[in-house]
Length: 444
Ligand code: ADP
Ligand code: MG
Image (tube, rainbow, N blue to C red; front, side, top):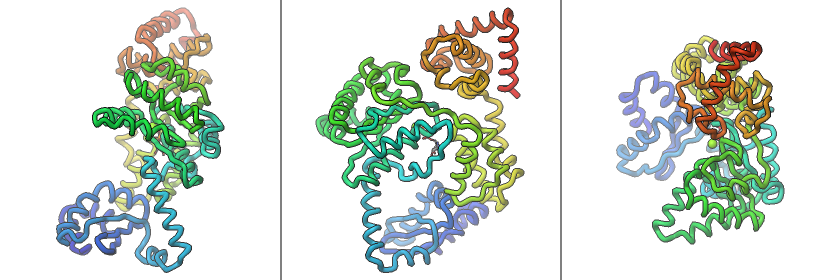
């Protein structure tokens, strides 16, 4: 079957695609399942993402439906058979694994987001330590734990890590991870089907409830009401609540005051954009996870160019590895420059608001979170105004958009900031110098 599958695909794909992704796979039929073995995680992820539906279709039609399932594994057939060698303790372990996998799935947890795969750095140290505490002492350390920071900095990863450790260390723990938008959608579904009591019971009976991106509760009053009661029920019975948001609890707009204040009852920790060393460490860790050698100079090259977002950092690495597998060339600086040319050019051209905030914060030796906070002392307010003025100058964002990106401020605040900076630049030489320096750093 596999041979026929391969023959068919050879006709459908370019030879480079075929040689890179399909040829290295090994296959074995087991009952109604075709097991595919990939040489490493990277090939596994890629083939699964890009070819799984087509492979499934081919297998079904080639076997008249006798092969109904596909599974992907890393390694070779030999290794799998050795694992299968009759060893009772091993099979007990596998049962436990399967059980854990099932509990993980029903908690909506991603098995890859663990503390082990989370690289620690100055920018995330506090958030990681607090999450770890929760993982070890749920319900008693801090409640709720509120993690906030910009996009792609690891909030979701940490929440899953908490959930995963709770499940792994306590075989009876009930955990649910949910994006706040899913919470809203589930609630609406429950209302439509007259199942709101089930809904309530489900969320109020967990040992840990992890709700991601709570800023999306904004303006959804019925959901906030429901969540408020869930929160109280869990809080009173000392079950753990973990929340995340892109900003400080008090600054989440469109939330009822009583929720906002509860969000700050426990411990609130920030995740900041990574420094260069942390970025490089993360790149190495992802590379080794995917079974790829990443030279030091290339890691620094990517880390230096992509600063504000770990998701983009990962995207760049993914693209580079794909390019290397595809062309058969090793990962070198030359390949990196070539493979990431478009991505870096796009990145360079568009100065993002985040980038401006980060650069200004570094320049004035502040934390980005201070810049987004409600604090009004001159030493923070002036840099904030500077960053707002630069955002107006260097990006295409509107005043309201800029205001929102600065901790949910009003557009008139942004307007006032641009005017103030304009006036001060004429009267205050050192401010004018700061402005020029920042402009140069951001656009060079
Ligand atoms: P957020 O929820 O803050 O937007 P995510 O948790 O989704 O960010 O993280 C984006 C990506 O970056 C994920 O793939 C995550 O695994 C990875 N990531 C973030 N922080 C780290 C870290 N410290 N170590 C390893 N990977 C990280
Ligand atoms: Mg997230």
